[in-house]
Amino acid sequence: MSLHDDAVAVLSGWRGDDPAQESLRQDYLAVLAREPDAMRRSCLPDHLTASALVVSHDGSSALLTLHTKAGMWLQTGGHCEDDDTRLADAALREAREESGIRGLRIDPVPLRLSRHAVPFCGGDTAATTHHLDVQFLAVAPPGAQAVLSEESDDLRWFGLDETVAPSDQDVHDLMAAARTRLRGTP
Image 1 (cartoon, helix red, strand yellow):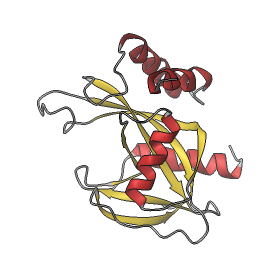
Image 2: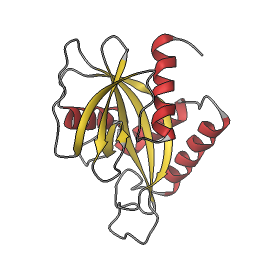
Image 3: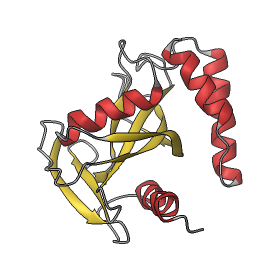
Image 4: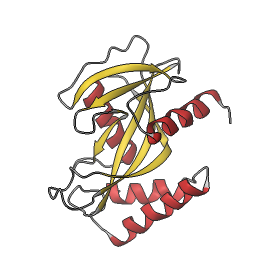
């Protein structure tokens, strides 16, 4: 199965927990239906990406990266690569690369979807490019030590209930979704 086929299968089997998430899911599936290269960064103006919110083994904190280009705290993630065959594995690869943590376990069921403009993607800074991000949950092993990569300015554990700044609403919503999944609360 190709990465494109896996993305279609994952998003066809997942349902958004509110009308906005469900609308995004339908939009992602439409892009996948019309763009055979929707999983590649060269697909403009929109392409799918994969990210993972890395949480501690006990679910009390989340590891965020201070993204160099965006200038705010974000989950790990990025573009899919040619050798990726599953969307969840692409998110896991990105989490490992950006956190330096080995032994991460990924939940293959997406947490959320996020469509966001990325002016620095695609080479043409005048064009509006969108990442259609499929966001997963990754759990770190006990005693995990994060190692800063060249892709970020800092890595820091934040309490899962903590307000993170500077950040954006997508990160706050992602952390809330992680709390709900991990704690089984609405």
